[in-house]
Length: 147
Image 1 (cartoon, rainbow, N blue to C red):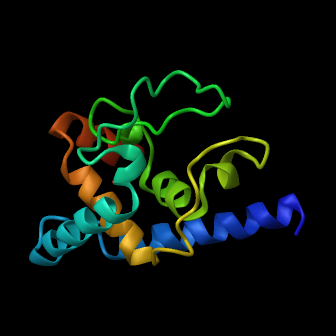
Image 2 (tube, rainbow, N blue to C red):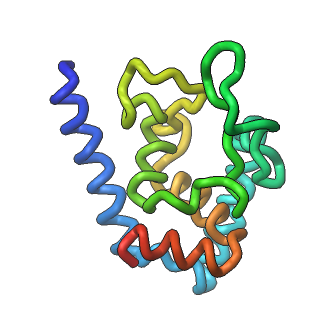
Image 3 (spheres, one colour):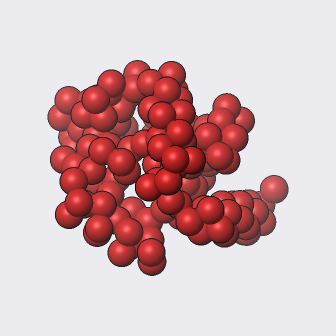
């Protein structure tokens, strides 16, 4: 598949994810939302914590490249930059991996989890992460997401 076609497919996947996310409201205040956060916490522990830390703290010195040229896994707590990104971007990075969005030449340890987690499970992980942020970061991320 050529790069343009791949990007078109990736964009379609992201758009579908955003449409579904907005359709469900990305709501974490309801009982269903609370259940999704609990599920997200479990899935985070199983799939993400080995790199991003059990407490969302990321890897040490995450802003400096490792010897192999790759950046360590960033924190997902308020000290990181996850909250700088829209829901659409976070979903796409998690589902497709960093290289799919930035370009195949970009080297990253962040794989896509689309073959491991379903879309609802990815959203549950993201809802868990977002549920840990202070209001200032959460409000900024909602604004970036157009919510």
